[in-house]
Image 1: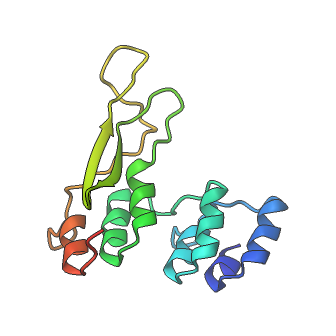
Image 2: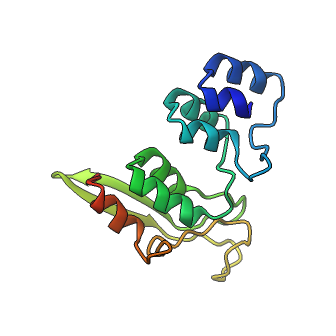
Image 3: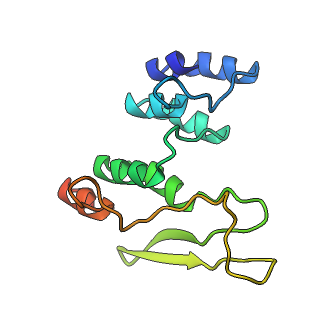
Length: 149
């Protein structure tokens, strides 16, 4: 699946996934088939793998966000920001829409059935204000590359 995703062979990816290939299996570098397809810009394979529940192999979602923003990959940015993987407790979700040509960011508050503010440890957290090795944020890099969206 890694090789098929990396080479952009959508039909082979579908064939393998339908026959039970592990969609999120990490390779020796910690990458997933989704990472392979994304790295080589195979948009149809990326879309298919995401539709089947694929995730990035990197455990550092903040780094993934910074990289996606710098590359102008809005699909990846949205996926990373909106990803909530907890069954019982929803992390705050951030939604980006556009009104009058301006981005509008809205957040859905945390809903916690236990009536306390502790989030489940399984919720993936991303610090959207974190910086890379040079302290450049996702917004800084996206703007610097001309990715206004």
